[in-house]
Amino acid sequence: MTSPLSQHVEHCLACSNPLCDIHASHDYMFPPPPKPAPKGIPHLTIERFQRNNPFPKINCWKVVLPTSFKPEGEPLVYLPEGHGMVWIQDMCEEVGGWRLFEARTNEDGLIMILAFHKPQTRWWK
Image 1: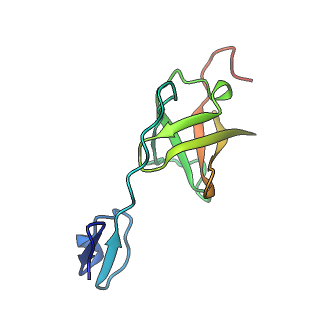
Image 2 (image 1 turned 45 degrees about the horizontal axis):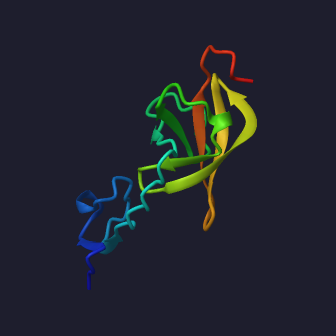
């Protein structure tokens, strides 16, 4: 039985989840839409590393927009890709020009690691 937030699929190729690897009949549950962000909270666009992933063993996403964002000055951000509001905290770790930040929600704890490309500016420590 399906609900408005689920979809019955026969195989992973028909599933709405692009990462699905279930080769049997199953119900895909759509995630609830995130709550809208309050005004004044920065919106970040994130994506997976497609090639040459410097972090192959962790759930790490790169921040692609805005490119001029200064993460150390904004502890609360909005991720419109279904995550909503998250708190970010510097992990004081840098790999290959990427600075890592933990992204956490109040309810779920750690949800992912965000990688910010290190720009050639003075604000970056």
